[in-house]
Image (cartoon, rainbow, N blue to C red):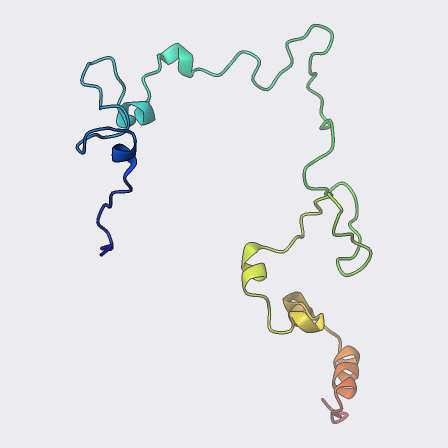
Length: 148
């Protein structure tokens, strides 16, 4: 009895004593002063209303004006002024410091094949000495010939 995609009567009009053809809500305005959605999106601002405010990016309070210096003032958003701690050690999840080496969205949605084992993709691209490679293969249970 209830057809998908078809309006159905919930008996709201009949419960209040309204006629069957009653529609809730305001009718669309027909006069020129009413704004349409398109007019609201496009905007009808004057050119001087679109200009930035006088205080945008600067303090206008006397005695507290910002001074331009060679060195930046304040703390940068990405902390390149300090040496970050190693990523796998001593970094709290609750830390609000952005070291600039956080994982990207791509690496979060599709992590590397060996990330669950603690091996990052960067570890595969790192240059290693012959002695380091021999130790890695020995640790995996393989022996390399001496000339390799």
